[in-house]
Image (tube, rainbow, N blue to C red; front, side, top):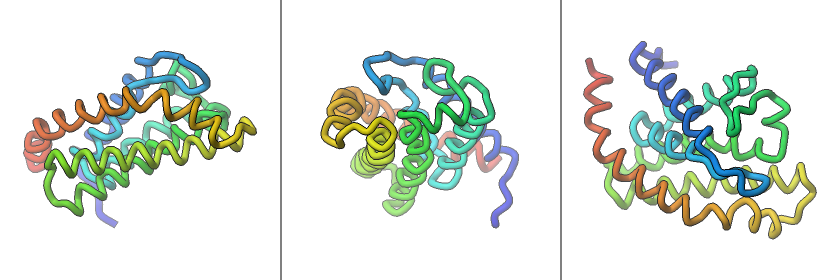
Length: 180
């Protein structure tokens, strides 16, 4: 197993903290709030890659599971993860990994590869979260889509555009930082 450098661990911690901060910028529109956490998830994947991006989100989830109020609305704990929105929270980890993995396969952070990888990441989060939501709430899958996915699509497209711009501007800087 590769030993992580202090710089890499610090970047993972920073992205975990950024996810916690962006989770608090939320609008409670129903059972699943709109928040900005995915911006950090995709930035971590786009700037750090699959492994470190997923690790940053795992740190975020573990901090919340340990009781730090990092989830939307300053919630925390295993009970919150086991609740209706827990699948979306766990989905951040898988989403970051998949997004980074796709980008590593394309080899470059082009607009097209970023859009494909980010939309794939959103799809994974939607699948994890919506299946978990239906299981916990005993809601039909189609009703869960109407509550937990469709209202979020316009905002998620805007988040995608923002992350594409940020990754393209910050990627070379972060890579230089990792080499220092």
